[in-house]
Image 1 (tube, rainbow, N blue to C red):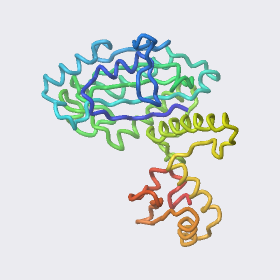
Image 2: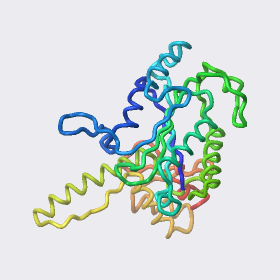
Image 3: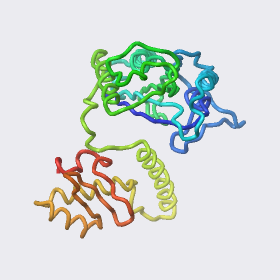
Image 4: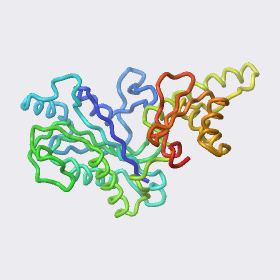
Length: 304
């Protein structure tokens, strides 16, 4: 199943994006991997193309365009958008998905959905920290380089004009998801319905927090075992995971919202409120409620 992720960046360092794509990077620590001499290490396999620019001059091309239109000067402006198409690891074995094939899909997708923008399209075959799933990065300058014809997903006249910025709305995102689904289904690759809310919504921040936490826990447990002590916990849970576990436990036993509310507070110290049909949760160690939407569709009123 291919999934689509989006990251908006306010960094004016367009060159950092290119460096990330071509050099090895530790995703957990957010740092480049260096050799014994302190030099960056080139990725073992990657496929890189540029859209409306030469890939290795992406930085200079973006800066030149920004100067031409006097845009992206404010530090709070979004300078680039980073889309990631992550394919199901099973596509490697079930459908013989290759880096070249994924790169062709990425280029088709970028040309169709981000016309007029300067873009880097790069496919990695090693997955996150060596997990093995093939994925494609599409990084676009937020500023449009050239005029384009109106598209089915165009919402405003300026969304076709050079010198105006990429404008991601809920409807546009739905179009992007549907576009990816259509391509993967046409190519015979594993695919799920991206338009349905995720049962467990795991943000990139939570994903990496879990990976870092598990890594730290494994190191601590190893030290305990060396001392002959059996670790009490072997699996790290993020704060949101603990909330999901608590909600699932109480939801199996509660027969009404009032009972669900009472047990969740009594047994886990989590407050729950229903505001206009939407649940939100407040653990004892937080001051701000977490919406059910941030946890996943399994934890909202309709599903519960």
